[in-house]
Structure formats: C-alpha cells, structure tokens
Amino acid sequence: METTERNAREMMRERTLVLVKPDGVMRGLTCQILQRFEQAGLKIVGLKILRTTRSQLDNHFPQSEEWILGMGQKTLDTCAEYDIDPMEILNTRDPREIGEIIKEWNYLYLMMGPVVAVVFEGIHAIDVVRKLVGHTLPYRADPGTIRGDFSINSPDLANVAGSACKNLVHASANREEAEQEIQCWFSQKELISWERADEFLMFLLGENIEHTEQKEVNHD
Image 1: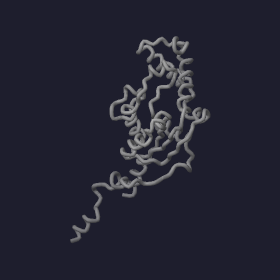
Image 2: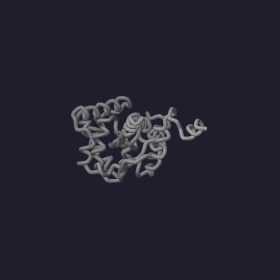
Image 3: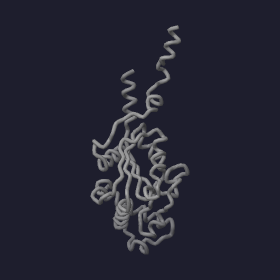
Image 4: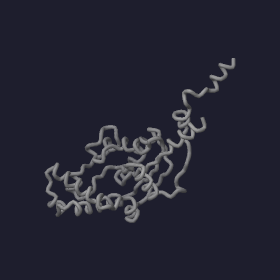
C-alpha cells in the first residue's frame, strides 16, 4: 500500500509553467485565468508578478535556427492564407529574416507590461494546462478554453499592425520545455510543496481501502 501511495503521489507532482502575458494582466483577467487551472485540480506551487528583461527572455525562448525559421514560415503561411503581401508589411519574403522580426515582436510584447509567472503542479499538469489554454491562434481556439473565451487578436491583424499576436497566456509544451522554463523564471526556493485539501479524497483514497466506518460495521 505504501508503494502504491508513493507512486500515486509521484504522478501528481508533474509541474508546468504558465505565463499570464501583459495583455491578460492589463485586461484584469489574471484571477479568472488562474481559476480555470485551479478548478481543474491543479495547484499553484510558485507565483510572482514581474517585468521581464531581454536577458530573461533570451533564456525563455529557443534560440535555434529551426525555431526562427519555423516562426518565419508560419508568418508566410498566414500571409498567404489572408492574401497579404509580406513585402508590404515586412519588407522581405525570407523566412529567416521574418522569423527574426517575429522574435523581436514577441520580446516587445512580453516587455510591454507586467507578466504573472506561475508554476502549476498536478497529475498530467502539462497536458491539462495546454487543453485549457486552447489553440495558439485565438480565432482557432475552442469556446470554453482561455484563449477561445477571452482572446481578441488574430495573426493577420497582428502582422499588419507590426506586433505579436496577443494570446493572453503561455504554457509549456512538454516535460523538457517545462523543466527549462521553470528554471528560467523561478529559483528552487521560490517553489513551495504543499497538499490541496481534495488530493487525498480524489486521488489517494482508493475505493478498495477499508474505511474506518466499514471496519466498525464488520466488527459489530
């Protein structure tokens, strides 16, 4: 039984990073956004509000050639989908040059105001958070997701306006990314281990465990 409970507790310790971006903070949506995750059974083990620096974002964002090219190609795809000439708004059709432009827009976006950084912990925390956040592009996010309910931006408008597509929230994509991003935003001493009141009832109190009341009935 001790091994079973230990394994169950280990499964519940998965952690992920969430950033409420400046548009979410400045629109007064922080509490509503965090509430979505807490209602889904996740708990906050790290929380801070801060203004980001360029050096911090250098550690947060990937710096690989593949990532830069990927952003550039996505932007070209968006331009093609909405019949936008990239030369008119970006002065280039080169995916790498466009990727560098988009990267800078993302930096400026996250430095335009305060960011709320949060570490959530719980079973399947990474996948649960991604599901609740919704599609990266707000207009493709399903109703009921954070971006689907609250986002008011679109990539084509953002490209024409010369800014990042403001989508309220960042969430780690996988375990490797979560570990790297948590280390970027939090020191180990800023993360607190604690137990939610419902954890034992929902996850650790198995139906096959003999309850105290049951034992008393059998004894009589």
